[in-house]
Image 1 (cartoon, rainbow, N blue to C red):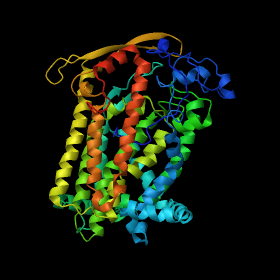
Image 2: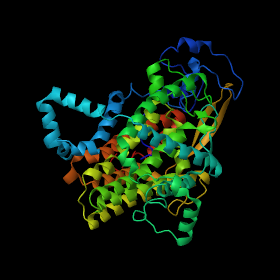
Image 3: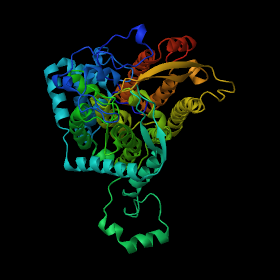
Image 4: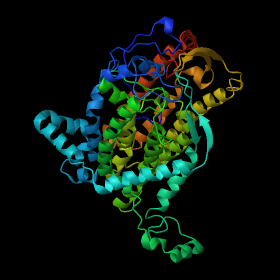
Length: 545
């Protein structure tokens, strides 16, 4: 994934980029629709004091070289957006204990031969049953407490954990985002806290504790009386409360995106903001690129510290619940899937600053499509194949599961190697070796225009060697290798094609992202990117696509 991955698409104004403005980002580009009435009253602001409302010129200058697309370019996106809240609830219901206890649980493992024919034979009943199933996934107090507690711990770690200062790419308006690089510390400290606070930790029943405590530690805990006042949660809590917590996230996410829409228009954190003139577009794609509240970067917090952390811990939580549910019998397909995904996301946090330079962050604004996607779609879809196995074990043997695990690890490691190769190249400004030779690259020039109208020419180096000389997004191929491996560990032969949902979705997502990145780079670099494409003609798969 480009980790992260959620509904990583965006909606923007539709303007035509001509050859004369390629390679430049100007504040004079006009949006396709007239701005809202309130936007016409924008007054000039001092530097570093963003306007509380956006003018017609603000919109395109704040889109960071992406002026068209979204619903107009991809009508299927609109359909997905309309049904995604309902679909996420259905995915939660399908993997729930309630579904397993119903009279139709067996249809989940036979969707093409049983579920679809049954729906086609009685469409009104099918629609009614589908809506009833989704409506049965309701938020609860416990589900809301889980979500807010999960976020609260992430927030405390975000504020307290140390890390070096790092920066994201400069935007078309001259803004350079600043971050504290403490993602790796967050990853391991959060994992430890989640384990220690559960029934497998020191306050759990002795027979449930995963690791025996040294006598000195046990005596200290007894003397302090911590476990007399603290009652641990079940390590399987992420499965037990998944339907209700996802329903809570669904509602929270919808209203949170309303807040982001208004914040971006009236109280932006940077000049990379603006209104398209349509409330629908503004809500879906967002109105601000880098929103912050009290210094907290909302995109990084939601995309990484909540979304990726939940995904990382969910697999082992599901594995524990499966183990307890099926008489302490280990499902090797689920275990190796959980282990592989956990390690993949460890890799993600090592690479987190690379993610902060990806299209999710530097192009996609903080709106419904990415923020709701990370809050709801990632937990619902990215954990679906693992969650499905709690009630429907994979049945894979240890050797078979281990073999698929190694394949998934190869995909994850090669994905990291490709990203790392580019990061080293950028950090050294091309003064490094790639696969033992001097790298081949294009020196691309582009122009930024700040809020005062001052134009500054910049340069970027486009790597065309190593992994990046084989395809412009060869790392996506390795990401898909890992994704399909995780879904294969759910044994689609026995459990049906539904367990392939994540891998199929990610395939469409990454193909679309490669297309959008090409469009963005052509606008930003113009003729230089055309030269790069001549050197590296394939997008994802060398020799094929």
